[in-house]
Every structure is written in C-alpha cells, then in structure tokens.
Amino acid sequence: MAPTDSHRVVCHLDVLLTDRNMTLTELADIVGITIVNLSVLKNDRAKAIRFSTLTAICDALSCKPGDVFSIDSP
Amino acid sequence: MTAQDSARQTSSLGRAVEVLVIIGMVAMALGIVSTVFGHTGFDVLTATPFGDNAVMSAPVDLDSPFDFGDSLAWTEGPDGGAVVAATGKPLVELGGPVTAQLSFWDPTAVERLVWVLWQISAPALGIAALWLILRMARSARLGDPFSTANEQRLWTLAAVVAIGGSASAWLGEAARAWLVAQSAAADVVTFSFTLSFAPVILGIVIAMLASIWRVGVGLREDVEGMV
Image (cartoon, rainbow over the protein chains, first blue to last red):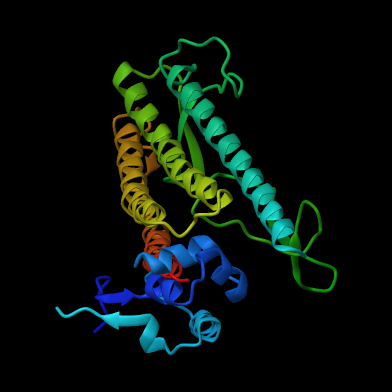
C-alpha cells in the first residue's frame, strides 16, 4: 500500500544549529542548497529529503540522520 | 544548452502552439458564423468570411449507377485482347457505389435549422477541445504542466472527443437521413449510415494519457516537497 501524505517526522535542525552556534544561512552555504529549501525542512514542511542533502547536512553538523529527524508518537 | 536556454525554447514553442490553437479556434468560430448566418443558414449575412458558400447540400448514394453511355465500351484490340473502343486504351470498368451531392435550392426553415445544427456541431466541439488544449499549452509554457487542473482538462477532453464526437457524428447522420428522406429525391437516392468509431478510439487514447498524467501529477507533488 502506498504511504499517505501525512507523516509524523519532526526535524530538529533548529536545535542542532543552536547547539553549534550556526545560522541557517551558514548551513545553506556549506550544504549547497537554498535557504528556502532548508527553511522548508526546518519548519517540517518538507515531504521528502534526498540522501545527498541528508548526507551534506550530517557532514556539516557532524551528526547522524537520527539526530536530524525523529518521529512523533501517534 | 543551459537550463535558461531550454526554458526560453520551451516558452517560445509553447507560445507558437498557443497562437496556432487560437488561429484554429478563430477559423472554426468564423465557420460557425458563416454557417449559421450565411446563405445556407438564416441568410443574414450577404458575404460570409469564407465566401458565399452556395447551396445547402448533403452527400447521398445513387440508386442506379450513372450512365456513361458508350464511352467505356470495349472492343477487340490488335493483339486479340479487350480495349476501350473509344480510346484504344486497356480495358477499365467503373463500379459503384456512386456518391452524389443532393442540393436543396429552397430549403424550409426547419430544414435550414437541422442542416445548421448538423454543420456546426463538429466545429463547436472542435472549439471546446482547442480551448482545453490552449489552457494546457499555457500552463506548460508557464512551467506547470503536471497539475491536477490539466489532468481534469485531459479527462474532459477525452469525454468531449469520445462522447461529443460520437454524438455529433451520429446525430449528423440522423440529420442527413431526415433531410434526404423528406426531400423530393427520397425515391431516387439511397441513404447509408456512415458511423465512425474513431472518436471513441481517440477518446480512449486521451483517457489513457489522462491516467498517465495523473501519475505525473503525483510525481510532481512529491518532487515539490523534496529538499
């Protein structure tokens, strides 16, 4: 069965950025994607993320995918 | 070629398609005006956009084949084979069915109305179809072809072509049959229904395209939310 559009994935980019004293603009420069797209991701409005984007974010923030995302309880 | 060049080329192509579609719609609209208000319609216009198209007429089959007299009579050629007597050329034969044009020189108001409805049904459907194509071409030029609106337009186009096209063709044949049957030539000519399933087949093809389009719309939605 195909997954529905609704999801409970929560992005913790804001916490990770605060911990590292980094701005969204700086992360966008390092990762190489637009600040608009990073903002979409940070505010939980993204529907999907490319592995390449996730890799770049994890490299830039020295973290693992599990640190960037978690799933809310239903 | 850069992405910008490609976008510019798509935009130019899209605009050219839009212009062609608009020209087609205008031509069909002028045809309808000409038919409705011209000499063969309600005779309001003295000159129509496509000239004064003479007489209201309908194609019919001839009951008896046309008599060509002796023009194709055969005789024995120099080598013993059969040749056409008049020209000496190799033997040929003309066969039926023979189609003729039944002209109505003084149609009644009802006959005019039936004829006009028959004649304008196809171009009216054509305008509706071209309008849908125009809207799709416009959205493609603006860079958003895989939208739910375009999917709906394709379904509508499929219905217009399959149902509208078939209804137009069949009702047209009914109108032609009625015109011929109540004319003075009813006993001289024969009438055969010519029904085409091409609109249904074309409509099914467009419906298949619409269902494929739906997949494209889904993919587009996925990509839109991807970072």
